[in-house]
Length: 198
Image (cartoon, one colour):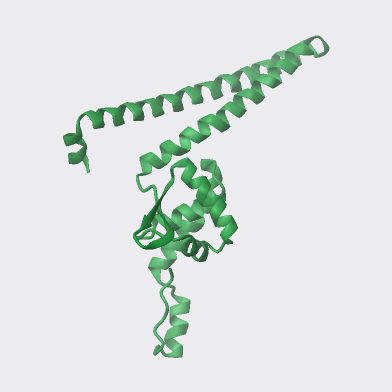
């Protein structure tokens, strides 16, 4: 949350503060805005990126009301995006004794963050890309006799290349995820080593 200026500041000091914003808040704002913009690259909505960024740069877990105020969205929008982030494993939810509010914390392990995103994108983006390419190839083959041979060869060559590319990326992501699963399994078998890594 932005720090409020002391009430006894002189007007000139206020103008100076306005001209030179708090560097910590400026850094937070830059990061939060940036995560909102790059959210689509990761396959998440801009609001989800901003919410995660707000939680990531906050030292303590935040309530939904705190998220609403910090991000500047409605409660309904915040609720929808928080549920989506929970489903992806990018945030966690907790409670406090005697308090009925829900508190949200970010997935601060960046490898786990990337792993969760890759899992989601592998299921959605790559499957969709492969399906659309296969459909285009099927359409091409179905009407092959109506297409000039040179045009057919060109289109088939390009579509085969992109199909193979998507397939290779899909397998690479699967390999990365499998390696991470293996790494976690090894750490679970050697708890002393995991403790030393922290």
